[in-house]
Image (cartoon, rainbow, N blue to C red; front, side):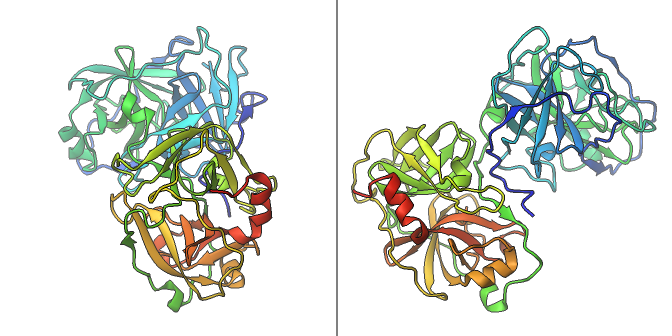
Amino acid sequence: MLRKIALLLAVTAIASGNPAAGQEWHWKSPMPKVEAKRPTPDSRIIGGVESVPHAWPHQAALFIDGVSICGGTLISTEWILTAAHCMDQAVTVDVVLGAHNINEAEPDQVVITSTQFVVHGNWDYNNLANDVALLKLSTPAELNENIVVAPLPPATYVVAEGTNVTAIGWGRTSDSTGGISYVLREVVVPVTSTETCNDAFSIVNDNQICTDGTGGKGTCFGDAGSPLNYDGYIIGVTSFNAAPECEAGYPDVFAKASKEAAGKPKSWKSLRPLIEPKGLRMPTSLAAAPGCNEAVPHSFPHQVALFIDDLYFCTGALISTESVLAPAHCIDGASYINVIMGAHNLAQAEPDQVVMTSINFFVHEEWSSFTLSNDIGLIRLPAPVAVNANIAPAQLPTTDPPVGTIVIGTMWGGSGTNGALHQANVSTISQADCNAIFGIVTDNQMCTESPACCGNSPGLANFNGELLGLGSFASSAGCEDGYPEGYTKITSYLDWIEANTPITP
């Protein structure tokens, strides 16, 4: 049920070894196949040759959830660049560095197991746009002649049509091959234009690069996420090719890679966990969508934005001049957090905003990423923040309002791309009704009706000037289906908060 808890910030560790070494092959490729719309070119076997061992020392093999395999690129001692379709829905990834034959336990191989990754904020599985993702290693990779960081080009770097580039990977060598290649292979293919590529697929955009598959040369199952190489740079990430066959001669499509695209997603990805409902629908009265409106600027001066490790976005609440309440699922395993206070529109550098970076934070000692119980933590600011009309600690409640009370949910984003703070009036529902849907709700949590796809909800729940709840989870079925949203109930943690930080302005 909790397969897609998107927080994915658990501590990573060195694994015991290559999971595929000496094993009967069972890993599958998640590489998407797109129906081509033009006639099939001449079909031949997939071209390419076995690479000289360790000729591409930035290449990584990713074994995902013990089921799937993708490729990736080491772009720093701590980060792997790969495809979003490989990481979306993933839970655990075994990363193998320094490999040539992935079916052998080669002495140069280094294996790290990771659960910390993020897909591009604008990744769209329907049209395969922005098919890039980042995976963070738990410890820096030790570089040597077989494990090397690959450089990324600037966003302005252009590879002309007709230029020969090199795709690499452990993918199939022909459509008739039952499994992938155990040894790393490479193929030289020319770049083709977006227009020519769209003659085949119609969904290719300027953030993608295509190669000509004439003669049956190109990528196949198992190559997904692997790099496209040119002039010492990684210029692309293997994304998709044509259904149903790889060797039919259609173009191959790669997500463009650059320092800008890989270093920071174009839009921040929320860390809110998504829980699969048990099949029960919300009653019609509760499924009715409440309004979502932009809040009056600074009408909720305790609300803060949290940007975590330059990858993730969450919402927190200022509760003293030195302390911020945050969901445990946001800060568990983080390295550093940029805390923005006094903001209304996060898409703008407003003069009232105050930004502090904290490396001092902790989660509740009984926090569980499996059940989402005790989903609360504290961030300590490096210096006291000055209180003013736009920045003020939240008032904490002493009691909870009865079920059916209208409370105010506040969240950034609204609908579309507006980065302003929004609000929606939502009714609280009973713990029993909420638990009938999700099955994990406890007395330390509260639920409200869904605020109709209103931004990055749930954010905070507010009532009569007090902070009632800290956003914890939403439904994996999507915000349009009327399922409720869950919050950590603040009244259940007043003693914990007081014991860990003084609540004084």
